[in-house]
Image 1 (cartoon, rainbow, N blue to C red):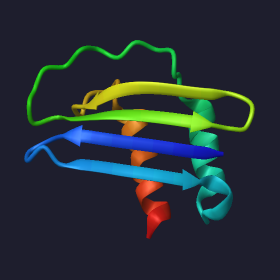
Image 2: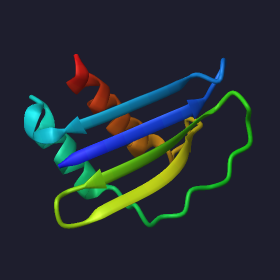
Image 3: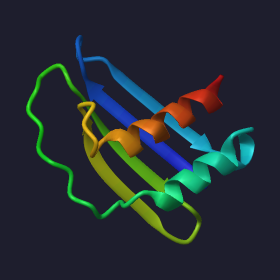
Length: 93
């Protein structure tokens, strides 16, 4: 499974980009299980704040490509996506 996460905004307008293939990661199966639980079709509330990171997450599992955008504002709605980002970052080390 290929996962792409691109974030922009935040305190200094910084950008972050992660492109991973779960087959090459020690925590790849954990990421795949987490992705299977996420609802890519759920609406994300519009959040205003210049210092908030805005993310675009795209997942391609070889048969279906899904994408969503959300604001990492610390709300309950962004919590599952924040967990996915943490798993992706953990796999990068």
